[in-house]
Image (tube, rainbow, N blue to C red; front, side, top):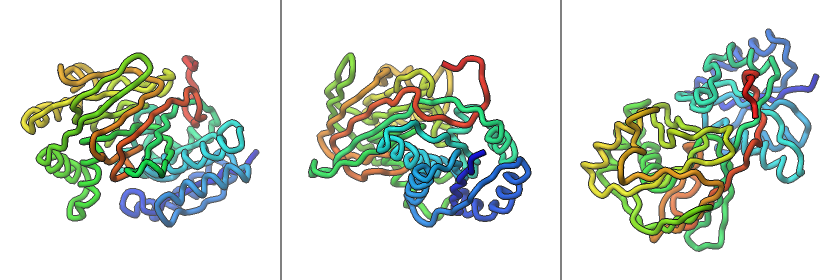
Length: 318
């Protein structure tokens, strides 16, 4: 049996990660798992630790943290696999975040013991991943990032930037206040979008690219996204007035009928690749983490059926 590497983000859930370290260690011992636990100490440290763990042959690599932590660890695993041209190391998740979007999207337990039992069962299923390439405004410096949940430009990452700067509020209320501030600022762009099967040129308020439907705990920005279908769900649209945006906003929280994609100004497309140019800079996020505060050229691609995730064994695997 191989040794697992657990990468713990002590800051997850406002330092709850650090408090939960003894519980994690005791739980993993109780299920008979041989593991080595390390802690992150800075943003993107999880990517470095996961990369090295994959190179060193640890398996599985387990992220103990929130969605941002999972995304960092996944990026380290995928980067190592791409560089060595090998299969990615399986990833396990011990959810310590506020929303735990990926766990909810995949139908996995959001408690430590429940998640540990899933990891101990050693069943993997491959999910699709998204890849985003973006350039800074000089056009010279490119950044590549993989995402398991979603990525966006326009209004959505603008709101993310605002909520990061609101230090006096916590939890859902902070996202709500940030959203109202973001809508009040009402940023708009002219964009050129090109994808396999079509293109669009014109005004746009947002472009969101989903591998999974749920993001931020309550928002279904790509409500029909499916991490097993080999395709990305892209939603773009232009809503000119603040009042119209506020009317549409509650519909982003509906998972089924009544979601905002039904609005006549919102368009939903299935893509394997997407290229975007904006007339002036926009921020960009991937899995809720800001990758660029200002970019104008972005490319999205799908990595179908790629990342092995420790999850329930199912009868409908592709």
